[in-house]
Image 1 (tube, one colour):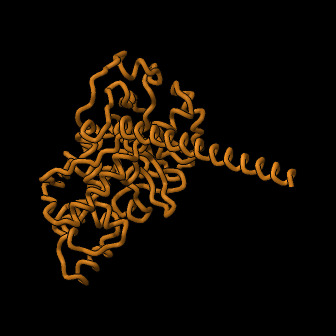
Image 2: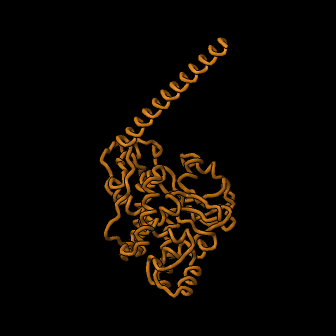
Image 3: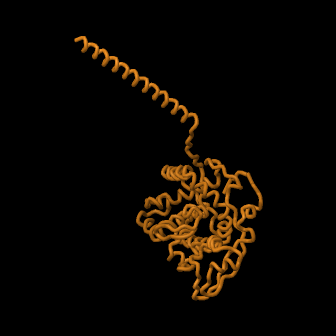
Length: 326
């Protein structure tokens, strides 16, 4: 009996000690969690983006008085404001690409806001979608050819910024003429002109904002508007980018490429550059040997002397001015 009493006392002591340990552990954990919560509240901030009272796209007023329009824009602002890497690269690339796009938009009589359509289509890069759309403006092959782009196994002018921008302007102007508004033209650029026309007719509406559309097109114009707001007012959405952080335009010289069965590696070397730089500055070239059976002549860009040197293309400047608008 005495032995059992001793064992009972030991077990009770162990239980008490265990409860004390658990209590102490819980107390430490609670204090740790409280410190963690206080640190988050003190040091971490996630802000809801501001939505302007008035907004225009290509001179057309966005009906922000409609709750679903306002919330549609808000969704894209939040998504792109906090998709920091992508949005930051868009700002960096814009200083290289926008000057050419802006010039061509002026020449073609297309509103400058359409440059933000290019941003959401390709992030200002030569990319190819899973569906086969290619280049800065993401033309499908048939549409690109319809609007004047040469697209073959050897040449793909969807990847030439100037040629593709002119083609995009022609396409957008034809869509504007068909639908009456630039907003609807932008929507049709995404879902196809026949698709948009069918939805307008079936739903007996005239405005993009009044249509029930597939999810991608439903968000499309709002994404353009969101990138416009962020890139026109980057600091208002948390982006501090100095001029020296952005990508400058690349200096180049133009030379003529002609003849058949041209070895482009040797052509590059003969013109004082490398095949890598030839393809980089002329991404519309699709092969290292241009058969060119029709004997066409092409204008190609090659870097100027020292045109690959960072200090040369930036003209030796380290401009720390913070960008206010793109």
